[in-house]
Amino acid sequence: MPDPITHCLTLVLPKSDAMQFEKMLGVLPTDRIDILSDNKALDYFDNIQSRLHVIVQELEQAGLVFDYSVQLHKNRRKQLLICDMDSTLIGQECINELADFAGVKDHVSEITERAMRGEIGFEGALRERVALLKDLPTSILQTCFDERISLNDGAKTLAQTMAKHGAKTVIVSGGFTFFSERVARDAGFAHHQANILLNDGTLLTGEVENPILGREAKQAALEYHSENVGGPLQAVAIGDGANDLAMIKAAGLGIAYYAKPAVAAAAHCAINHSDLTTALYFQGFKDAEFA
Image (tube, rainbow, N blue to C red; front, top):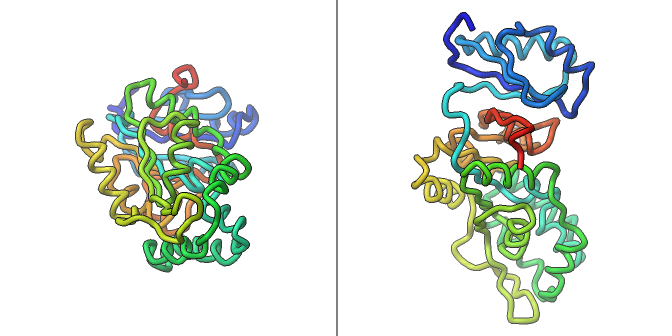
């Protein structure tokens, strides 16, 4: 390559598409490309960051739909994966699904949406929603998990590939440990943190154990879990809601996943069209390296 490599533009199509990929290649000088996934993902290198943003604009003007990241080429592969759970690793908000069993899903979902947008405080919103679950049988938690909760596409591959290459994997959730424990097990995360729903052995009490894990606690978790891997800059953090903002901004690679507008605006990059394996492509992983 004629110029020193300093920056990398990663481009990821929503799915493998030979025609769209060829169209993408037509905009890029071929001597600066590394294919990450056939007909789906590639890295393009340059020594001037602003040129990469111009290329993104050209691709958008050409009508292409894609996810992308622009970052320094060095140290892209992170040593810590730290992820939100609800609406990130899984396709649901667990508290909304529990509220359905209590007959208050519409009301709780409205509060959840406002909290995730940052319009109301997370801790107060969580207490208000949990209070509406009072007297729900604890047995409903397992029923809810079995019948309602599903991993998002790419979640398992993301966690297991990062672990395969030596990274620490952590779920940090404003949801509940009952669910984070099971999602961690099913996806392949080594650690999980979340809030604890209190019960009397048979029924939920309508309370959550203190302290509540919210925005500040997520950032603290990032700092704690990254201590022995080189600090927050060695982490990739992924989330969708306002309580993920501090964690996403502090990480070396902060990714907004189908996120609320304020989160997408603050993140280093976003996944809006593809699945969670895109977080691997953003770090320069190729399909052959996936777990």
